[in-house]
Image (tube, rainbow, N blue to C red; front, side, top):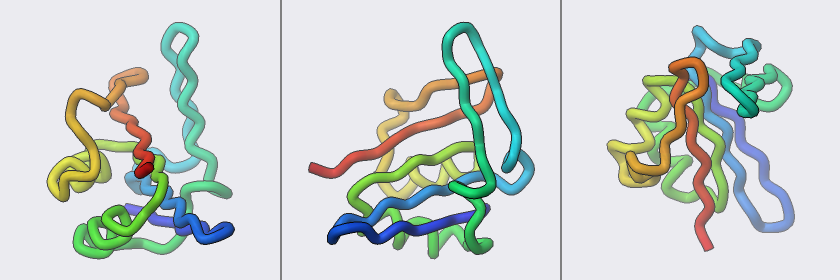
Length: 96
């Protein structure tokens, strides 16, 4: 998995994406999932590193089977919040 962190004005935004889909674009109906390397491609991260980052994140964008499974496992994403675009799971998280 690739993970990139953005620390802006006291908010931590985390982007997590499976390595095999980074840089690709998926489209289904009106939904488009564009996994730009400039946004998602940070450092390679382990499951533990991703879980730790998501647990402290204010917002997150997560795409791909491994990344989504990791977010669900740590309780950051409700499985009902996952959408699928061309079979690729995607979710967003916001802590208020």
